[in-house]
Amino acid sequence: MSDEPDNLLLQYLRRFNTRMDEFALDMFDVKSRLSSIEQQLTNMHSDSALMREDMTRMDHRLDRVGDRLERIERRLDLTGI
Image 1: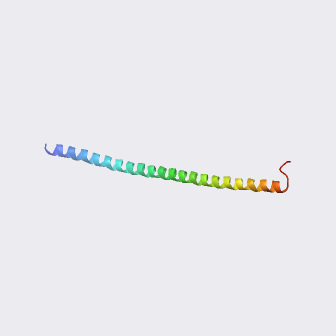
Image 2: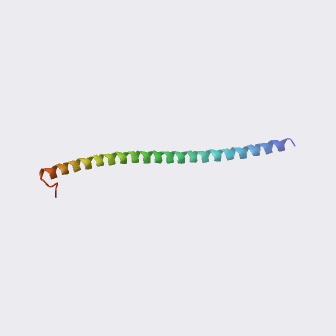
Image 3: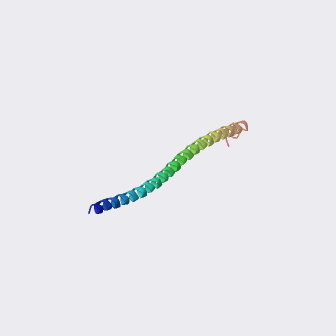
């Protein structure tokens, strides 16, 4: 009779061990997927910051082109047309 409870307890412990191993694998998968999402968000943030810088540079260049065009029009007396 004393063998039965020990065996039953060992069975439960083995099941528990198996489930904990499965849980550990699931957690590893969740952590790796979360890391991937974090990396993608970081890349998106970096890309948007670069796009803002590019847009700022383009705005600055367009302003300079506009200034140059106005100067050319003044020199050619085309401002009144």
